[in-house]
Length: 227
Image 1: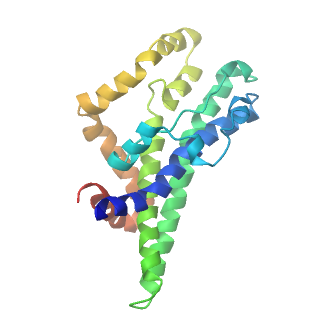
Image 2 (image 1 turned 90 degrees about the horizontal axis):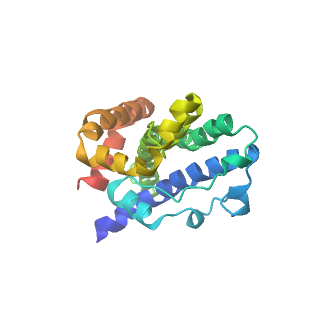
Image 3 (image 1 turned 30 degrees about the horizontal axis):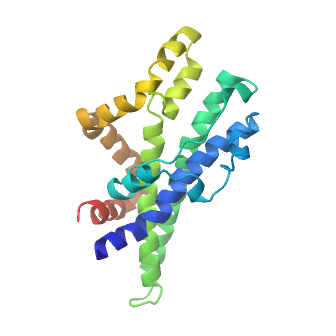
């Protein structure tokens, strides 16, 4: 029970921030390009309750990967539907990339600050949890950014690809969309691609961002998922 509470306390804020900003970014860019759907439905808010998907939230806390309720976008309201949908789709992963960079910077600041504190400092109990949250924030935002860029609709990468391809090929890809989530589940659980390809790519990107503090990220992930 104690470990579960520790896990939730470390993961909750970074996880909610990651999925909330991802969805708000989609709606914000859509609104700027002419589609007010998300704004009219009250989805351009940082209140995570407006965005949470119950199953996605549980998966996020249990497995370190999850999702929120997608922000509704009506392409017919966009000024240039095909081109604008590319930017709307890229907005979510871009938000996660910026959060990952912020988390990496925060991790560096925390590690430096912790090293400068005298032994037994009263700030130590505060600094350590923030460092763990920064490490998990880096991990979760990298994985959400890269996963959503996979070129499979309805993921953001699939929508970007549909916006880039000629109309005929785009329509063919659009026909896959109703089965896209089944395909994604199969790739994750039915093949070794997640372990042999996607996992190492995520680890490499996180390592580049964490730099000399990658050990803190690895220790945090072991504490959360392998203890």
